[in-house]
Image (cartoon, rainbow, N blue to C red; front, side, top):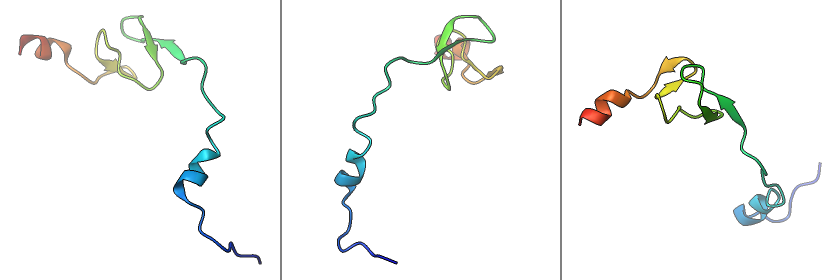
Amino acid sequence: MAHPKRKTSKQRKNKRRTHYKAEFLTLAKCSNCGTTVQYHHVCPECGYYKGKLAIDKEAIAVN
């Protein structure tokens, strides 16, 4: 089996992915309040993620 003669640098390795760029954000509706939220992110309005409270917005507002 052939072996590489030189190590592939991090820069050269990462250049393989430079041509790809996501054009649009994937958006969904929050299951709790219904606002538009980016996938895999906590809702900025109510603080819920996947139907569970992730960030208590009221406690932050009091402080």
